[in-house]
Length: 185
Image (spheres, rainbow, N blue to C red):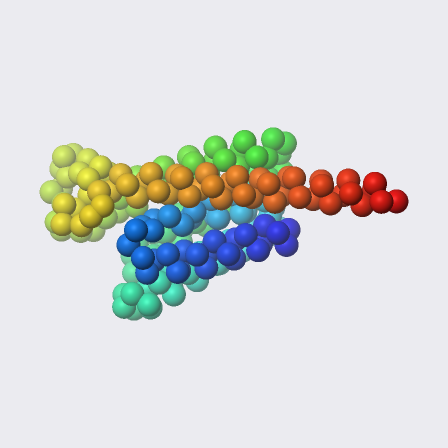
């Protein structure tokens, strides 16, 4: 648990730092932290990654001048809570690493669709039609770069890297330490 918690804290800190650099746009592994972190921390501590993510959302809002809690932050927090709750319950089953990676990627895609649909509904710049919704899911607002799909790509890559690191820390390190300690005896 300490290694997983350390990985969650480091990646949430990275999220706050990366927000200051445009080339690191959406490279924070949000769904890996929410789903994967909760899955590895288990049903008892599933809420801990959510607290850290929501705290980082609030910090980013203050740093970027957005002020208080907006609708997007609330939507994100509810999504993180749902994903983490499911992840915390899923950790009680076998084959944790494939479940962690597949669940994280599925949650990442769902978050992308939900977040962009929220933007489509809330932002008046999108035409309120199927074409406008599709634009929100693909290119996004043409006045902003990069296109919306780049955020999905970056998120899935970041989530996959986090799951690989968590897999090594959670599944390889404790076994290696345990086998070395029995070999010393």
